[in-house]
Length: 146
Image 1 (cartoon, one colour):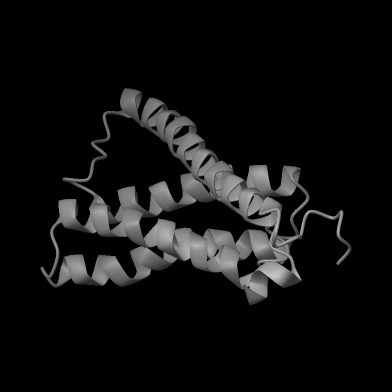
Image 2 (cartoon, helix red, strand yellow):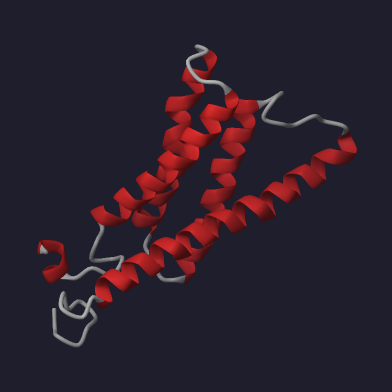
């Protein structure tokens, strides 16, 4: 990498870009969750379908992962990321549900705990996915070694 390409470990530019991208992904997931969640509830409201964490925790959990993923897909594709990294990021949204829903069924966790653990795991997994592809998310060779 060349000195002026934003990968200099001394300037910290790569880390700033990495953190900025992480925060952009958080905003994209929240936007997807709010916008698509409102659409789903708006469509279901006239039908009288009760759809909540109390009555349908599995569906709410999967819908939330989908909504967050949709927001992230739109933002990542707009920013020029490839499908492989985009789908890995979506996987980070669904992986916690795959683990936590069976734990809910086994009464190991309740719905509140499941929701909290799911969100914490999503943020951690998103960070791990980004660290896996450091170069794509703003960290150059020098910063990878630091």
